[in-house]
Amino acid sequence: MNWELIFTIANNWALVMWLILAFAPRREIVMKGIFYGGIAVLSLTYAVIIIPLMTGMIGGGSGGSPDFTTLAGVQTLLASDGGATIGWIHYLAFDLFVGLWVARNADQYGFARWIQVPILFFVLMLGPLGLVLYLLLRFTRHNRVADAVVPQ
Image (tube, rainbow, N blue to C red; front, side):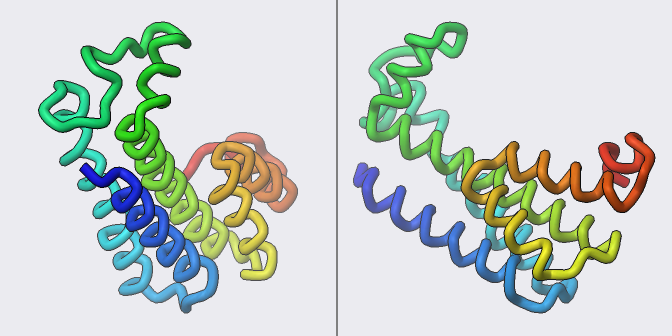
C-alpha cells in the first residue's frame, strides 16, 4: 500500500474539514457535512484499513499481532508505515469529532467565533489540551462544575 498517499489524503481531507468548521457558517447542512463527510469518512477509512493491517492481510503493519499492553508493543506498531498512518487517521477522526462538539457547544453557549477559533486550533493540534481549554472557558461563563464539564 502507498501509506504516504493515504496519509496525505487523510491529512488534507481533515484539514479541509477543520477549515470549514472554523470559518464556514454554522448551518445544519454544514455541520452534518463535517460529521458525515469528515468524521465518518475518516472513521470508515480507519475501519477499512485497521483489520487487514493488524492481521497481516496488507503490508505496512508491525508484523504479527499487535501488543497494546506494553509501551514497546505500541512503539513497534507506530514505528511501521501502516501503523503510523492508521494511528494518525485515528487521531484525525477523534480530534475532528471533539472539535465539532466544541463548536456546537460553544455556539449553544454564545461564545463568539473569534474565541472559538483559537480553541479549535488547540483541539486540532493538541487534542485533549484544546478540550480542557474549552471546558475551562465554558466554566468561566457557567459557575457550576457539572454545567462546565457534562455535555448536554
